[in-house]
Amino acid sequence: MNPVDVMDLVSFDSLLSEEEIALRTTVRDFVDTAIRPNIAEWYDNAVFPLEIVPEMAKLGLLGMHLKGYGCAGRSAVEYGLAGAELEAGDSGLRTFVSVQGSLAMSAIYKWGSEEQKQEWLPQMAAGEAIGCFGLTEPTAGSDPSSMQTFARRDGEDWVLNGAKRWIGLASVAKVAVIWAQTDDGIRGFVVPTDTAGFQATPITGKLSMRASIQCDIELTDVRLPASAMLPEAKGLRGPFSCLNEARYGIIWGAMGAARDSFEAALKYSQERMQFDRPLAGYQLTQQKLADMALEIDKGFLLALQLGRLKDAGKLQHHQISVGKLNNCREAIKIAREARTILGGNGITLDYSPLRHANNLESVRTYEGTDEVHSLILGQQLTGVAAFR
Ligand SMILES: Cc1cc2nc3c(=O)[nH]c(=O)nc-3n(C[C@H](O)[C@H](O)[C@H](O)COP(=O)(O)OP(=O)(O)OC[C@H]3O[C@@H](n4cnc5c(N)ncnc54)[C@H](O)[C@@H]3O)c2cc1C
Image 1 (cartoon, rainbow, N blue to C red):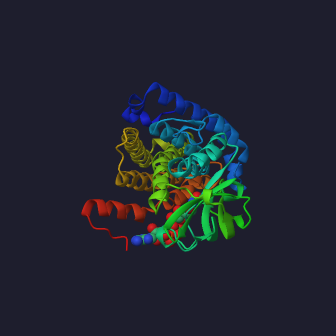
Image 2: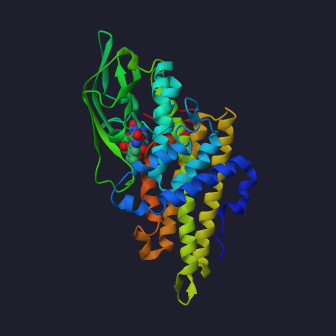
Image 3: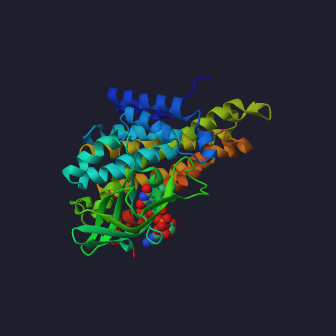
């Protein structure tokens, strides 16, 4: 049986340009050759495959939506299409591209001095320097304004003390963007990770995002020159603008994981015989597949609409919440439903849906939980903020 493209139900590709389709094909081929054959082993062994970073850099995936400084200067839609393909491989790989490009590089690109941009962005785009983004703390997650990490002035220098938690890539990063309280409100700092007093320890025992790294960071009297501060980022606007970039990528990525789960379930249902017929031939299975297909197509159409708005410079803050909340929520449901079609075999790493579902627990949690995005939409709809 020929593989069916679930996106053909709405002629999705008719909405894309030839360049967009070509980029998607390139990234899909990369995922098929470099990620799919190895992902079960990486996930099982909780390994982030550092060796594929140079390949990703060669494809222009690192900081791909940024212009200049060795970055690919791709559109928001192209960035989204690439993210969906990477996450069809594994959320951990899309997360790497997101932390590097949307968080660490974006922070320097949007808010850094020209010297900071020249120093860091070209080597980050080339995959020679990995970056991380330290906002969350052990006691400050959804409410980053309550962060405790403090940067005090000492002459011309800054001295940072505090702790960060869940910081992607920190133990393999060459540079960390660290957000801290100061006497002048929250500011961002560019911290080379070999600075004395910077300590990153990978978090173990994760049941989600196993093929990626998240760390606890301890900052003990980390002394930095005055030039380490991001000069243009004042208050939470700085980190939030980067989170919005990453949230946008998630809108596409989550649907990539959903599509891959659907495809695994469809194929299995066509091959697996029970009660003398393929599972695909039973109405209950077809109902599941049809429901999944509808949500995948709707999710991608939503992602594309938001991407086109972003490329036109018209994407609004609350619209990112529409996409992040909907697509993460639906992607998890799809991955779990796909797992049911696989029966017992679905709980092994031989098939992707449960791995995707477990990963998506992280994706729905970081960059604003479901609840936080519901509150953003609630405020937009009612005019009343209900965060506290
Ligand atoms: C795999 C992974 C990677 C990550 N990578 C990074 C990274 O690179 N850099 C970084 O800085 N952070 C990172 N994070 C942290 C992530 O952003 C936080 O986990 C997230 O913001 C939620 O914070 P929390 O875990 O402290 O949960 P909490 O904020 O404690 O929330 C716990 C629960 O309470 C709910 N809640 C909170 N406030 C309200 C409210 N007002 N009303 C109703 N419900 C509420 C939440 O929705 C959630 O369900 C990562 C996390 C994970 C799991």
